[in-house]
Length: 150
Ligand code: DQA
Image 1 (cartoon, helix red, strand yellow):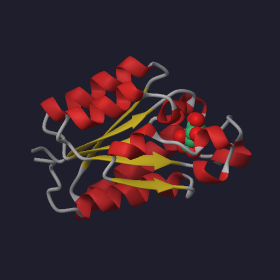
Image 2 (cartoon, protein in one colour; image 1 turned 30 degrees about the vertical axis):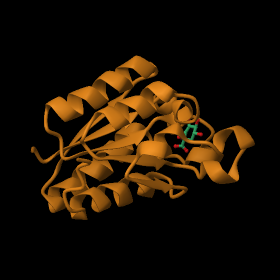
Image 3 (tube, helix red, strand yellow; image 1 turned 90 degrees about the vertical axis):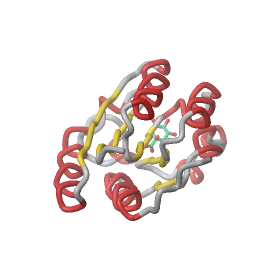
Image 4 (spheres, helix red, strand yellow; image 1 turned 135 degrees about the vertical axis):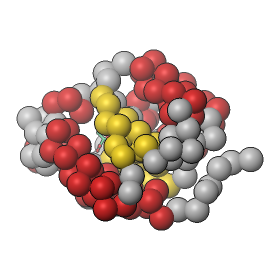
C-alpha cells in the first residue's frame, strides 16, 4: 500500500471560489489542495488531487486508486453524490477506503440533496465545514486502522 491519498472532486467544483460563495466559501480548489498538501506532509501522506465534470472519470479514478494501492480516497462527488449508482457500485467494487466529503451540509439543504449514494458505501462522511471538511477527512484517514473490507 502506498501513502497516496486520492482526493477526487466532481462536477462544478472547478468553479470553487466563484461558485455560490455564500454556500461553498471563497477557497478555490487550488487553495484546498495547498491546505491538504501542507497537512499531508505532517501526516506522512501524499495528495493526488483531481477534479472532473464527468461521472465516468470519477469511476475510473476509483478503480485506479485500488490498482495503485492508494492509502485512501477522499471523494466529493458533488451532485453525483445524490444520483450516481455507478459511483456507489465503484466504491463497493474496490477495497480502498473511501471517505465522503462535502463543503456544505447537504442534509440541511434542499430535499433532493438528502440522499447520498456515496454515503451508502463510504467509510465515513465529513461535511458542513467548508475546506476543513477535507482537512478533517485527511486526518481521519491518517489515523484509521486498515479498514479494508474483506
Ligand atoms: C457539495 C454538495 C452537493 O449537494 C452539491 O451538488 C455540490 C457540492 C458540497 O461540497 O457541499 O456540488 O458536494
